[in-house]
Image (cartoon, rainbow, N blue to C red; front, side, top):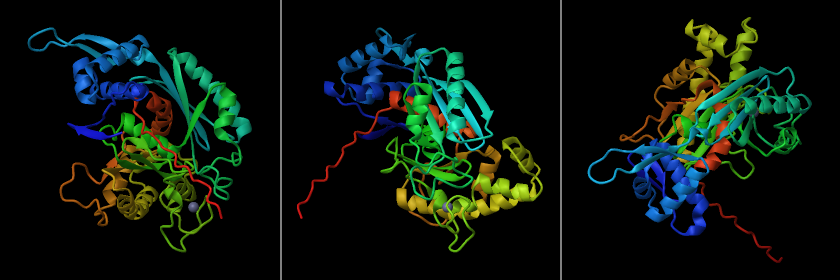
Length: 408
Ligand SMILES: [Zn+2]
């Protein structure tokens, strides 16, 4: 798939052969979603599909309730074109964020509008407790939305399936090591569940609804309980061979530094720049169990513990940004997640002059670091965006290399 930039919108170009119909449906939905509403001729021009192919796809999407007619646009001479927009009532997706101490469930309609949101706290994040709670939340939310359910995405902290990294530690879920989480969750609710690590889902959320809307190549540094990186490459998430790409929390930033709370190595980024560490510092200062709004309030009061943590996080994140730029060559790096906007803004501000990297160009369209726009619900929104992403956006075609057995 080729990504072309038309105006500020990167646009995926359609393919004319009929066998690419599924791809072309996504291309049409994507271009309509990005522009709000469009006529058939305009869609054909932007996607480079033939007018006949566009007419067929638009009819099909409209009959399925995914696109809706918006009337005619008044223009110059001749019959004004009928406009089409994504039909918000065409379906809904549900996103669930399972964290160590809470579960967030959201529902989005096809236009990406938030239709429902529930947060429950968890006393116990083991599978025995989570699986029935997950099924309950899902049925409550889907009943309240009413629209056809197009899919469910779940976000859990990674990494997945790594010996010695998943089984212990305050930033991972207890008791899930060795369990096929996607299968267990699908069985619990009775339909297929897409599962993703929190940082990748957050990047998908920003790509569909937030700061990444017009950006097709970016890295998203995501504050969950720990810290991770989501990567969007040519408009689609980059996951790596085992779904663990972007595990920057366990990159050593201080050789022989302090023991990492999750993996036990010394000097991991997560041991300095994570919400877990911030809460630990607050707890040591006599402020246990601080939540999102407590942190927001303490930050507004310029509490010294928060100030000190922001300084430390910025100190380690600045060089990390430069390293990511050198490795990924992104258009920008987005910083976001489970922290108040003002705190994330301060971290970006205190990174100061970033180290020189391949991104140190004089002519840049975007700053090197941007604050995410999807806020506290980022991970759950990202989870709900996973099935939506599969419905509305063109996918890269994947080819699987086959390694032949080499006779020895
Ligand atoms: Zn670590």
